[in-house]
Image (cartoon, rainbow, N blue to C red):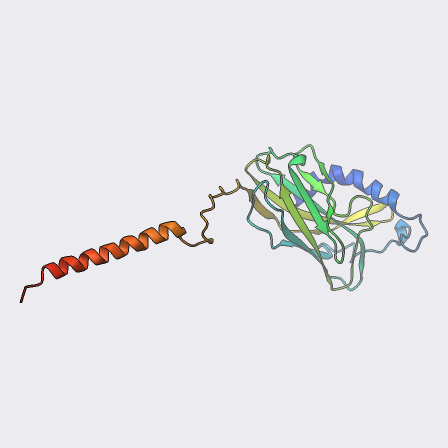
Length: 241
């Protein structure tokens, strides 16, 4: 089974509970913002074999140190069709190799275009995956104009208690259509490591990357004494007039 497909299937249980909540939060049928299911806007051709939106995770670090500042990556959603795709909801999936990571040991935040940072709520599946929905289950979703790319910024932070592990992040994207929803994108995989924080060195009073001041002075003095001693020895060996 294709890895992306496997991740999508693993999230099915969470999404099955998500779609009704998304629908319940939508305006009543007939409202121009949420037309009935049989007249809901379709993102691309439903009969097409490929996804109408290209999805890509990028610009993320190769490792995160628990307890340090959050680091970030980005999710690009590119509409490949000639019509706008509305009410689009990306889902971020995290899978750790050892199965030791818990939901209280990490925090993911997202920033929609032109918006502020917000926490992403997560649910766990019975297979150990963590599925988060930027914007929450009741959010309005994203609108991606025809041929345009919308970038969602993400920040990930791990608590000091997070164990060293290998994690793979991916994103699947669905479009809400009245009482239904359909997959419209699957991203690449973004692997990274949870690594121990580097040890903190004692402050020696010197700038970063430069020798310690006292040690440098001692070394210079020693070099001067060696030079002076060499000169005296050479002078002593010179023949007398």
